[in-house]
Length: 94
Image (cartoon, rainbow, N blue to C red):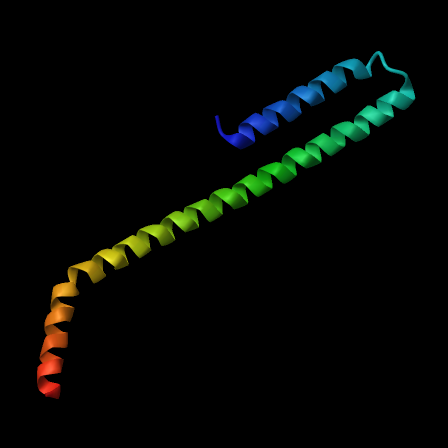
């Protein structure tokens, strides 16, 4: 289960519980429950938007990490060639 599904499910459970008791509640409590329900819906939407943003950032970090690993492999593979080139330059400098 993804985090957003868990949070959205919890928000839905709170919403269902609040709506179920709405019919038996006095009118002023019903208005208050409606306001709380709207806050829950807003919070759930906000949470889902933030989770999507975090997922996008995690994806980007993964791509950058793989790129960095590839570059490091390329550098490691070219060490011998770099050492040979440095030796040649040192010989030419003398």
